[in-house]
Length: 123
Figure 1 (tube, rainbow, N blue to C red):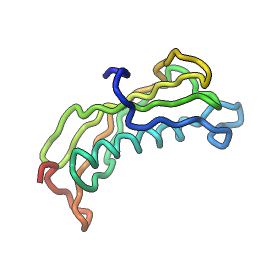
Figure 2: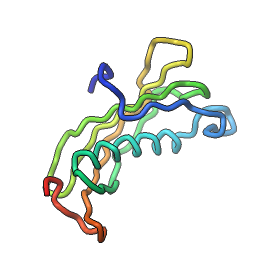
Figure 3: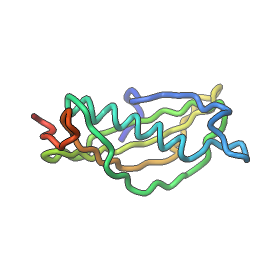
C-alpha cells in the first residue's frame, strides 16, 4: 500500500484522545482505522457493510497530541458477501513533513441488507 494516494481519513490527534501518559489511546486509533475501512467497504458494497473481524495490530510508535493521522485503505479480497480491507495508519508531526507508519491491520467486512442479513457485495 502506498501513501502517495489520498487517505480515506485524515484527523488530528487531540488531548481528549490520550491516556494518562499523554500518548493517544490505541482504541482511538483503532476506531479511526475502522471508520476508514468502513467508508471503503460501504463504497465497494454500494450500501451497508459491517465489521466482523480485525487481525492483530502492532504499534510501531506512539501517536502524540497534535499529530496528523492519515489512514490509507486498500481492498485486498472480495468474496460473495465479505471483503478484506488492508488499513495502514501514518502519523506526521503537525509542523513536519515526514510521515511514519504507526500501525496496520486487516479488517473483514460483510455487506448487509436493511434487515441486517448478509447480501452479495456485488448485488
